[in-house]
Image (cartoon, rainbow, N blue to C red; front, top):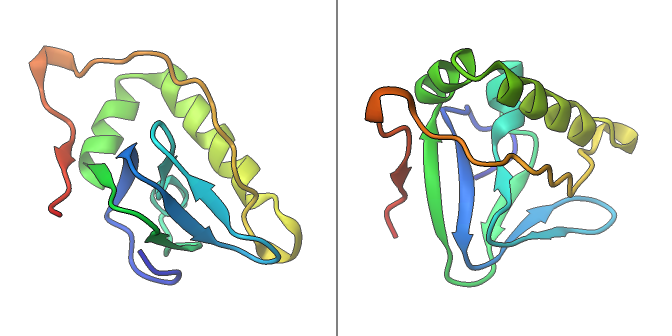
Length: 120
């Protein structure tokens, strides 16, 4: 994922490690972390470049599925918007990382699958 690219999904780290390329120091993401939400919430482009630094497995949540999910889960919408704002509050326009909220457990309505695993 490259800074400035069009955003159509967000990602959840299942395993492995990824680096968020930020100045002055990169941030490492691990299992349980997520990224890519800022551009979806703000309807903008990616705000950071993120690269795998070891073999990783990610879950992808498409923008349309995220919108449907958040429409039916307003409490999670509030958390995600708060995280997005906190990450954007960095100095000099750099996002602040990590912000790691506890999202709790949520399940899709009517047994719908809202995510898919990324291809290796």
